[in-house]
Amino acid sequence: MSVSIIIPVWQDNPALAGLLENLQQLDPAAAEVIVVDANGDAECQALCQQYQVRWIPSSACRGLQLDTGALAAAGDVLWFVHADSLIHPAAIAEISECMASEAIGGYFRFGFSGVNNWRLRTFALLTNWRTRMGVPYGDQGIFMSAAAYRQAGGFPHQPLFEEVRLVKRLRRLGRFQMLQQTLATSPRRWRRDGWWRRTLINRGLALAYVLGVPAGRLHNWYIRHHRFKDERDGHSAVKASLGP
Image (tube, rainbow, N blue to C red):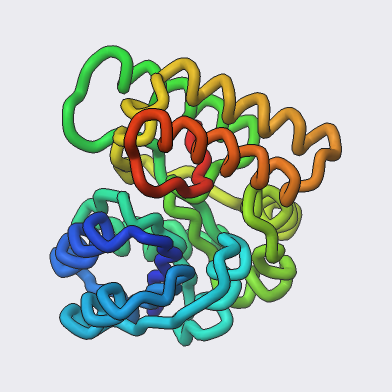
């Protein structure tokens, strides 16, 4: 069963370089790796050439990026991975075992890379509990068969909460399973924004989305809020990316 890895990026070159190096350790290896770049810069393209992975430019919309990668992929299984993820070498073996058990897809347990302390463990525990009851986000490495992706209608072309509709439809089609393996993500955004503050903001956005506020409006608010904070704190870039 061949696995295509799809990585949406926007000004993520340092993190992407680490991920592409990390993916060299996969056993078995992916059939292909596709990077969908919303910034369309030459440095990212050169990095993809260095690691012999496919580079596709795209408009800056997370759902569009993911769908663009999925439509270009040739694998039996589509695996969507964020650039700041840390992948276990046995991840594709875990995916293959899951798919062989007649699941239509699934996702990994959430965890943080680097320092392991009580705060990180608590956040990871709460996130994994939430995703059993609700929808896992993209930083948990969502995967599914290419056929199920098409049947479920794929990712909607929206900048936030693009996973919600797709995961709900996949769960109606069959078993969508949480794996025991952890896919670790960088804690840098939580450290930047404050642990509880970032989580409360993200939960507030999720509640607003459930209540019917359009994803585009929430995205615009998120960008304005973080642009102001980054300018105040001396940071140069902001990106819409939700976590727990």
